Length: 106
Image 1: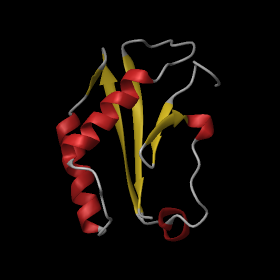
Image 2: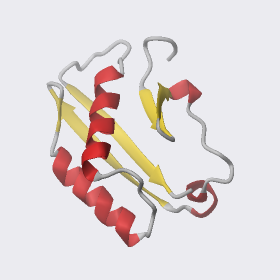
Image 3: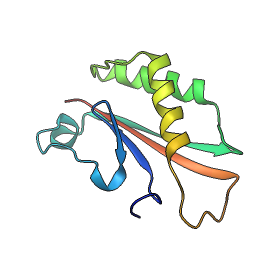
Image 4: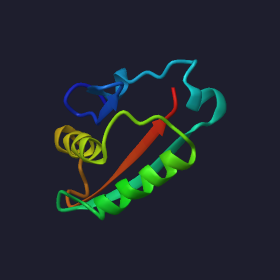
């Protein structure tokens, strides 16, 4: 994927094409596996059970004592924006898509 036909990532406060997303080799998630992830589905442009997914992410973040600078509401807006501005090349399933969220400690 390149150019306009590319998913968008939110990394360190910036929305960037996934091909430009970089994680430091000193990222705690990379070095020690400190991080949480979740996969979501969406149908007809609506993220399925978004509030429940956010709650689960925050429970995991709290359990692993990961510093989270965003509130639940701010993180929800980040996910919605990533979803809205991402494009999907050769979109064979326009009504069903997936989103993978990965949050790591620094």
